[in-house]
Image 1 (spheres, rainbow, N blue to C red):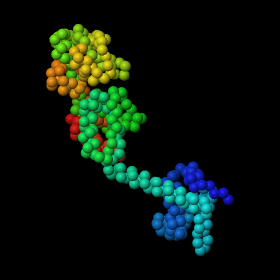
Image 2 (image 1 turned 180 degrees about the horizontal axis):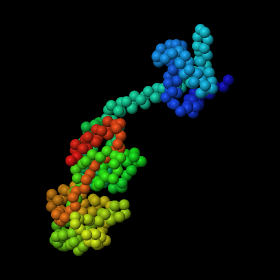
Image 3 (image 1 turned 135 degrees about the horizontal axis):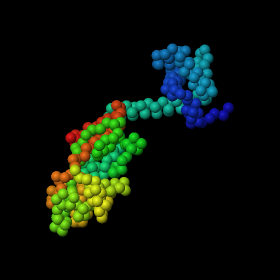
Image 4 (image 1 turned 90 degrees about the horizontal axis):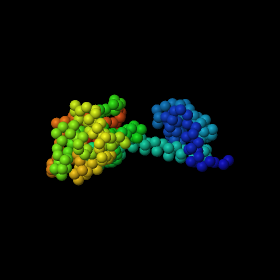
Length: 317
């Protein structure tokens, strides 16, 4: 009789598994015990089950495979050729299962592994990146992949562990931890101030160069508290330079081209040094709320719990 190679037997057994893989694994464990212990009764003692039940596990495997695994007589038992190959296959499969279980158990008890986090570009560069480097120094067995984008990512579909969201939250299916509010600032360079003057109210901006921020192909606009839509629309349409990156707009403002409306964190150093001058501060809208969000899962891994606690301690309100 031609014996199929052990890998073929393994594949064949996997294909023939029915609904309950747990029962199959148990039967495989019992079979290995029968071989190693030397009898059904000895294997039964290992699993605290009856000898007839041990025999049923063996019969279930043989029926699934369509082949005898063990030949039993009144005095002894011996493996068939297929039984020897299947025994080695079972040992490898069970060793892999045990290793996977051990790894999962270790990861559930230790902060380790890769975290994928998505954050808005400016917020990520100015706030999250410095905090992440501190976090990595404190947790040597964790790695972080930071996705910096102004695109609204799908956390679940794109398999992110967590995200920073700026603005009102619409999805209540996530856990949300509040971070420090995200404030905006309007500023201009001294050179532009000397050339074009300082706007006293938002309405004055129609006579100024306003650097436009483009988000997903649309002008984000400069909306101030109490401002009517007509004035807002007029100013938005007058922007001669637009970009989808705050750093680019900041450089244009530093070059004296016009005024920029950007997160305070992005221009904080230039405001302190006098390279940029804040204007219209009394008309700015309230800072936007910011949150660290992650899927509502009561079995969150220690690596995520450690990251959330660390970020909230550094960036939370």
